[in-house]
Amino acid sequence: MESFQMIAKTFQGLEEVLAQELTALGANDIEIGRRMVSFSGDKEMMYKANFCLRTAIRILKPIKNFTAKNADEVYEQIKAISWENILDVEKTFAVDAVVFSEEFRHSKFVSYKVKDAIVDYFREKFNKRPSVRINRPDVLLNIHIAQTTCTLSLDSSGESLHRRGYRQEAVEAPLNEVLAAGMILMTGWKGECDLIDPMCGSGTIPIEAALIARNIAPGVFRKEFAFEKWNDFDQDLFDTIYNDDSQECEFTHKIYGYDNNPQANEIATHNIKAAGVSKDIVLKLQPFQQFEQPAEKSMIITNPPYGERISTNNLLGLYQMIGERLKHAFTGNTAWVLSYREECFDQIGLKPTAKIPLFNGALECEFRKYEIFDGKYKEFKKQEGESEEGEDSKESGFKPKEGREFRPRESREFRPREPRKPGEFRSRDDKPREFRPRDSKPREFGSREDRPRGEFKPREFRKDGDRERKPFDRERRPGGNGEFKPKREFKPRKREEGE
Image (cartoon, rainbow, N blue to C red; front, side, top):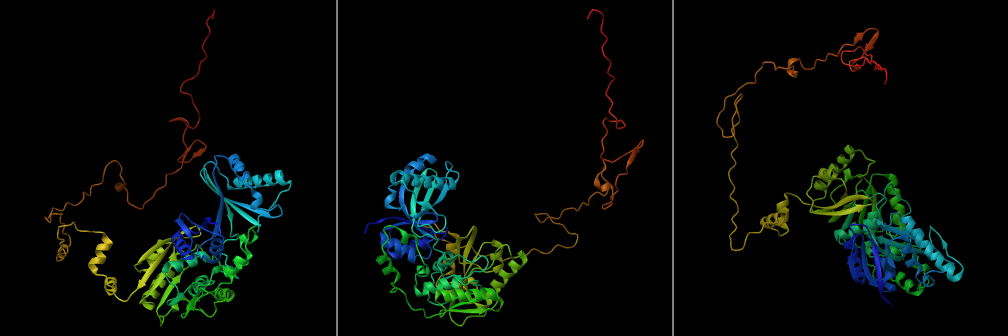
């Protein structure tokens, strides 16, 4: 089959994980970009990418790359494409535009131009035109413009790939499935031990973890992909990919999901049943305050609340409790926490061993790793085979010059200064100095020291004639009584005879 270029779009921060997935899938020419990874492959690879990738939002197949400086040039370039090979007159289509350009300010205007070019092409050639349909079109097109560089692509996914199909209901502000899968893959967990989400909400992290542990493709729940409506769709090839379960494996451990909200627990139960992983996940209605040390080695991956719906005091108290539970009820294990407020992480009170920037929607978050150990941090690192000296030098980045022996600075005995006696003052050179009390004489020119502090006397209202004036009413002239008076009386000039 013919090989062609493709683009897998994702969230910012998940590009490396997506590239690793594509490598494992057998894709070629993998290049990482911003919120996307480009790769090459044939039609089978495109079907597999949609069906198997956990961290991709959509898979695009570029049709044409070109340069355009205005909307008319975009129109001409789009109209020059042989559209009968891509789109039927009887099928519907829609255009999605993404624009980062000073020349093209409005994405909708660009999408209208692309639509007009396609419609005019069919009208001139077949005297008929395909219809535009915004929701669930047969063919979805994507045009991306960066300054003057334009890329027109076919969207092979259709609805975003994060919509797996197993989610029956959701709590308020649920975690995106693609982000949840990316977080789990970042930790390196693939089912080697128990996994715990102490604040699981609608169960997204436990469900994605179960699919990863059993190596079940996330696309198995989807009812339809956009490429299934293309003219060159190969039904037999896709059926082979869909029905291939040879890569699925057994999972011998357990995944635990806790939450203190009864409604969230009920929603998570429905979603887990819809995903078919009920035997791998144990749900329990339990607040994090009651979390106890697990009997087996475990890993925590959680997304605590950090939205605007919770007051600051309650939020900080929640994270303080998280840190306390991790320190006292999760020793010897590893925890990963996603949040976006630095003050929340500060309340945990533990030193993270990794910080990974991630975006949860528009929020710039961090995914932090905590290795929970019993005792001091340096002793914990010693047990892992790292010396204190090696750890310190790695943190500071210090390297002694070649040929010179490194001599550590000798520690000096700390000698605290003697406490001062009452009324005793010392200068920096430890020589006593004369104490000169401040002159108690009142300062001149009416300074603040002239009047006792705290005493306030409002100005009295004054009266001129019958009119009462406030302190800040200003006279029309200094010395006047409020009436306007010219500086001198105006006298008209007398005309002399003959003027």
